[in-house]
Image (tube, rainbow, N blue to C red):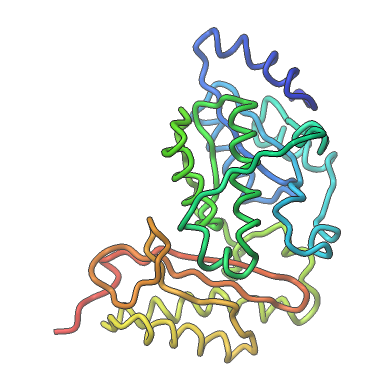
Length: 289
């Protein structure tokens, strides 16, 4: 695996494979790699001729300086894991390479980012995500880009910007990878201390309770959400949000109507903020007779 640090070097490295007609897969990360990232790298390896993993902690998308400072960083470990997963290139640019002096452009996707994470973290969060993703796509020019379902709202925003800006890339989404007890893998999990580890399962419990309520025949969105919140409160965790959301627009769903919906949740457990989600398919929710 080759480690590259400039856009010029990345483009030069990929020029030969591209001219030869080889497919290029891109897996954007902020490092602190875990099995969720590795599952995407392996998926890219299985379907693309060249696999590029990016390693860039995008400061602009952190709304809390403490969260940024606490974010784990270990490039040597990440490089070893990326290579083991099958990456050909690790692109690890310096901040000035991504945002050079005088940088003054922002990519903003209206609508989808207003709720959930956008409401909690501010519009600037998803503006920063959209901007850096467009830059990475332009830098690498991949045929396919890989993201995880855990960041469902981010994925929806990227789908929209790729469509709206006519960016020639296919988006592949990998299933959320979980620890044996159901906690969604996250780079922040290593910061969950002591007894908070058990309380972190409240997010999974909230999703499971909301799903069970729907599967029992409930169609009212407020009642389903209330069931999920009650399950979280039982573990002494108050959600920042637990909502039923349309998978395409991310608008709130007041009543199940046979379309897939997203059960999305976020909460702070101790000093760590966690998110999770799961798609509720129509077949999972039965209409009352």
